Structures are given as structure tokens and as C-alpha cells.
Length: 202
Image (cartoon, rainbow, N blue to C red; front, side):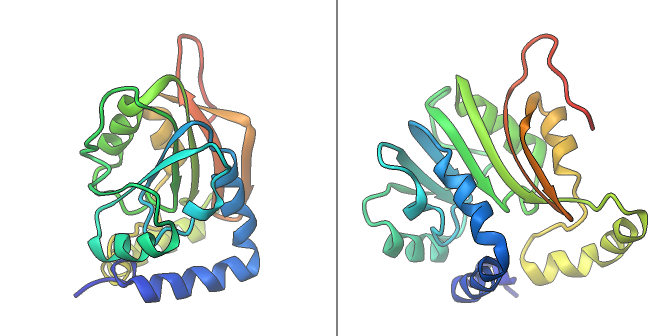
């Protein structure tokens, strides 16, 4: 059985509801900060693609062919590639920006996916990320752990209890605290491959 993330019309309907309740501003932040050659990793049905600034040369990647067909209708001139985060078919250092919006909750191997992001980013490239994360409230985190197996099956891969910020740091990125925003279990931030001496509060 497919989860809701693999049913494009249902996924779009859910996104429309979320965007009407304030999520749209977060998506706009995610896309409008992109620069240069940009990888929209996990582009899904292409909701980010029309929001990129002029001058951005975007490439969309998603593992679901049906989602890419819907993305094509939103942005006909954008190259779209069917691939997984853990095996990106691009040369090293080719992207100035990688954008991921509500993606790494569903990546099967987040550390491998982030290693691939790091590989395809240019030396001074930027990862712009928008994710829901494990709650900082103990009771809610326990609830997320409890519902995770059923939720992951129903959604088609989403894990509600992932500590994605900690994973990003462990994968060798430094989160720019100036860009970090938190609202309940939602996070948005920029990160860059860490250099010597850089670290993150976790």
C-alpha cells in the first residue's frame, strides 16, 4: 500500500492546508534564499520550484515518478531527475545550494543522504533545510516514538521522531544559528560543511 507521500494529489491537498495555516512563509524562506545552481532534493510535486529567485538554475530530484510528473506541470523548464538522496547522480561540488523541505524525515538512511548532499555541494555551498523534528517535550517525544511505526507505514516513510538537527551536525555540517528558527516541532536553518573549530549546540 502506498502512503500519502506517494499519492501526489493527496500530498498536494495536505500541503495546501498546511500552507494556509502559516507554513507557506517557511516554504518561501526555504526557496527564496537559494543561489546559483540549486538542487531541490526531494522536490516532490514541485511546490518549491516556482518560488526560486530569477537566476537560480534549479534541478529537482525525487524518487517518485508520479510526483515528478506533477512537478513537471509546475515548472516545465526545470530538469527533473528520479533518484534517491542516498545515491545522487551528480558530480562532486556541482551545486551552490541544496534545498530540502520535509524530506529527511523520510530518507531511509539520513547519514548517507547527508553525505551525498555534502559531496555534491561546492566548497562554500549552503544547505537550506526545513524539517519537523523530535519534540523537546519528553511526553510528546515518547508519543512520537509510540506512533512512529504506524505513522511511517501510513505516510509512506515519514518518521515523526527524528532528531534531524543532531543528525545534520553529526554528518559534518555546521548550522548557522543566525538563520535558525524553531516553532513547536518545526525547524528551519542554513548549514555549511563544517571547518576546523566549528561546532553546533545540540
